[in-house]
Image (cartoon, rainbow, N blue to C red; front, side):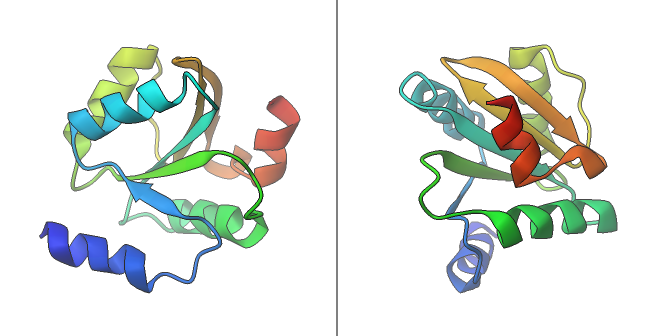
Length: 124
């Protein structure tokens, strides 16, 4: 399963270099990374057209020079990781959802039609 999941990322023509979140350990490493620079967590439902549109909006407007690691969570496949995000940051689970983490704290929480590159940049 993981190999086919990872090959999806390799074939993607996205402007975003998505880093897959597939375990609690991956999430912990991402949170640790936020101590040095803000990171973006994108919680995506592969069964939801609104989530597909939010992902497409991010990918369309993302600029390669943005200096943030971008993590992608397929919350259908890895709901336990989504639950851990809600627990760690005391944030209600939503889908789709973008959470920007800086210095190991959630500083931005966007959902559904709020999700855009402009909204992220305005709140940084």
